[in-house]
Structure formats: C-alpha cells, structure tokens
Image (cartoon, rainbow, N blue to C red; front, side, top):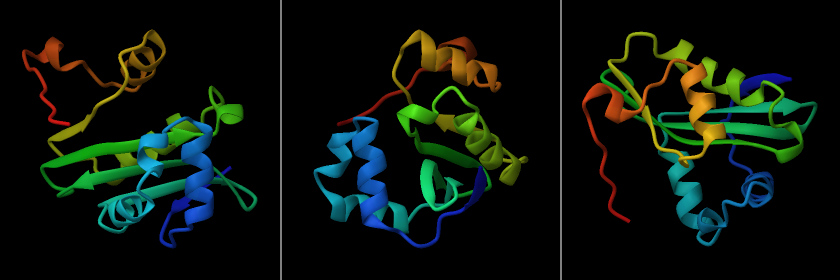
Length: 133
C-alpha cells in the first residue's frame, strides 16, 4: 500500500469508492463532490498498484482546526490498517493543530476505531456538537 497526496481528481474512481461504501448521498451531485475535493485542505489516497483502496479528506485552516470530512476504505480492504494509516498520515501533517475533529456514525465499530487513535467523544470533554442538514 502506498499513501500519497491526491492531486488529480478522477471522477470514476471516486464514484466507485463512494458507491462501494454506500455513501450515495455524496454521489448524487458529483459536481459538488468535485468542488469539495478541489477546495479541501488535504486529500490523501491509499493505493495498491493503480487501484484506489482508500481516501481521507480534510478541511479547515491547518493551524487551529482540521476537520476530517471523509475517510473511506474499500469494503474488502477494511480492518487491514488502511484507514488507520490514512488517519495517522493526516495527524502527522498537523501535529500542532489545536483541534482535529470529525463526525461519524455512532456504532460500536466506528467509536472503537476513533478511540483507538486517540479521539474522544465531545461529551467526554464537556462539549456537544451541532449540525444543520
């Protein structure tokens, strides 16, 4: 596996990855998704050969806050360290950022994954989060 900066947006591989993990709400508007990628702070991709197997997208200012917007791993490559490697690569890029945040599904699997990488739930820090959809 090789992790590298994702600089050249390729709609076909992004569509495939998002579809494979079931994130079809994003693929309903591929123009908006492309714009999101083009305006991201950082996008890193995991490849096996020429095959995209995972991606992580961060937004924010890179100094006081970084928000992990997307982290996706092909279903057949999940639980093999791809997501961990992607997230650690982002954390290594921003070691002095005060807040690195993300929002995820509240399932035992996702909670355990992020806690294993040093993240805490907002409620554990006396905070709460809000979202407007």
